[in-house]
Image 1 (cartoon, helix red, strand yellow):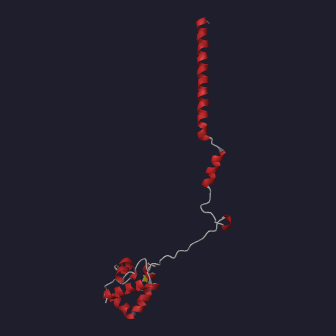
Image 2: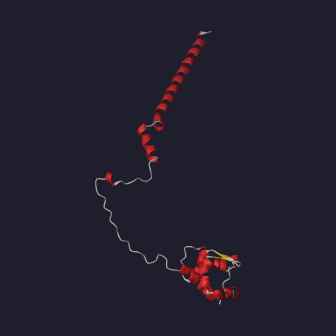
Image 3: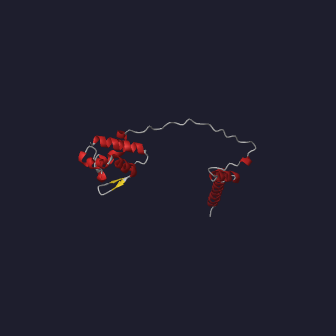
Length: 168
């Protein structure tokens, strides 16, 4: 092996060693800089966890407070009615027309004098009772208040009066 070959062997080993050490130094520096992102103070982690699992509401106990809590009751004005009562025609259009316009479930069609005459002869009171409480018979079926339990009895009875007046 010549002197020149020995030089290049030593030179390449030296260059490789320097590059290897530079790479190791680079990795250590990257590791050091990223530790703040991945490894944090245990107190910060515990604070985050306890914040995530804390209860939604807490029980108030008077003995915990040094001051006396005074509750002031304010009398709120009572509204007479949030929604005024609907007329018979409005109740028919919003609740009754679904069945009584097409005869669904054996319901008499409004305006069909022949279908209504038999029912009217039994009495308006019976019609109103069936409309409010519901009806199951050989002719058909009607749920209480036509399925609209939010309606008052008076509104349902007004709808019965409206349908009878249109079918006489």
